[in-house]
Length: 126
Image (cartoon, rainbow, N blue to C red; front, top):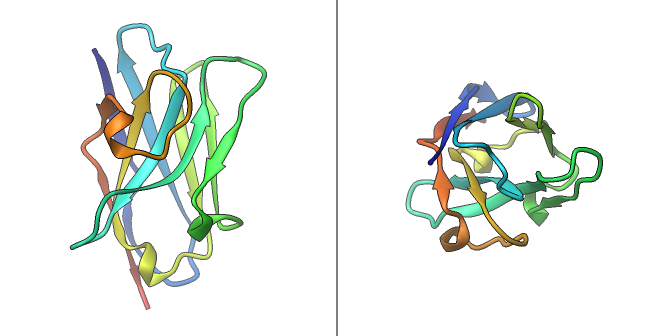
């Protein structure tokens, strides 16, 4: 079983930056796709970004249109940590942010991710 644990959330002002981390542990981690999702109050959970995991040298990144150019996903495959560097934060970025992992090809669908962390709150004040 894979365990995922997010950290780094908090309260920031509009325009600020924040970095989230997701540490993976458990059985040997070979899940090909890891991603960040978020869920704002009253809204459905949505993908923010994802990154491929299996190759030590090649990787692909995927971003939601709403965060392109502001958020950047990265990985440390030696230590099994995924990051989300968030810049130019807006009040509409306020949400609980989750990291997730799945086997197989990239997907933006929540239901296709098998492993989830507990989430970390990000609040952006105007």
